[in-house]
Image: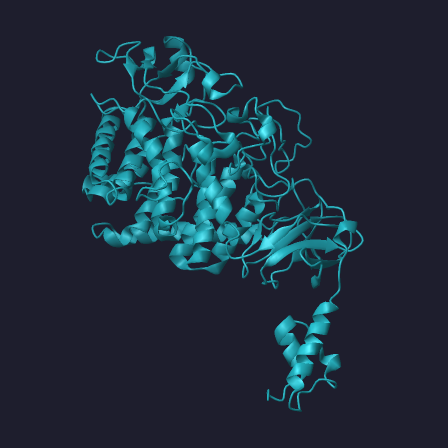
Length: 612
């Protein structure tokens, strides 16, 4: 005998719908009435409204995260439309059932181009499944999914992307599938460029610069950009070590005892160690050809490769990375861990003796030959590199000389980029503050306050934007590599969430990911291979001549960039719309390891938080 409950209560429990109009029929008063109730429920389920999805065309103006959402996550789509508010439906794509009805709401904020938008909030839908949004008589969204592990495969792919970027090794089909390739750029006989020559290593002297990752769409390797890349990836591991214990990427080292994320990091660390001159601790700025190779496969890119001038920026970024690697690899490889720390301290001392060794490529080319015209990564302001290196070395050694450098630094929040790395150090200090008894608690509190204020500002201002995301809070966010700005905003918000537990910070990080995966002014999911509308022609030499294979999955392209430095034809000049899926568009459609590191942090951190 079941309790004396009306069917409307029972049915609402089972279906989430109100069936009170049937209450006079199904009050459970008699023995056996449960079976009648079950029969009625089956009837109701079988009679749910069906939607003929095939009658609807995809509505390009309906912008949504094209992967999907966690079950309890805020779920927002944006409809770019001049229409009045309309009814929307959520339809289960497996059985064509209409699951949810709602009404769009006009957002008073317009896009940068003045377009009106409407908000579709379906956060109440928390049942796992595959869905589409329907605007009746108008169109439908791209499909999306709701499930607990929704970002796991994307997170893996964003890390596996680094494997595809490896130099000096074959990329085998057992790990890479159709994107396999022959070994290229052994880099065991790299020439000392005239700008880097000294009495110990004269012009033309050969060194081993093997391993490492190709930096971006080209085949060169840059210490400065490897700095923020490795710093971000190692921070991801430090923040969520348990998540990565079992996360396998199907790379050659997957069967060893070291987490795969650390195996991949190790590949680039090995190269960076080779970029340090053991005689004095200085670090060569980059390993490069004199000019960019053509758009060819790496095995066909055979021009002479050089290491160029040692620079203060390279030495400080190197010192920071190696000090961080020292603590991360201590458990897995104690010998390497100590080696990293010694290398870090040597680089620091070189930088202290050579504080103004700026890499100025134009000046270099006036004095040395052959001229070098590849990516400069020139940085004339080095206070932030010094703070980052000192932060990591202080955590590693507890030497107060390093703390003095940190304590006297400016605490204003600056979102990390390759040339602004101070807050990578502050993130690390906050991460380890409980183990640093000889720091100033007041100083730590000031850093926390700066982070909190920055996070609060982003969250507050994003609510005033058309797409309800942090990227639109400032036009200046749309620069070369703007998608990395979005990812690094997400990292800030996750760091703030970890410290303060404020739910709006986590929601803001999801807003950044929603932006990157389709809730934006172009309608693209900017991650190759993930989503219904993704880049097909990224500026990436690894797919040169093999475009028919499609792009390698897991790469974040640069994103909208009103600078348009590549002179490719764009359909818009508005900052959030200046993106084109074109092989020649290195200004908006290239890939880069530092961008992918920030993206990998955002995706994997959100999945790790959900898994905890």
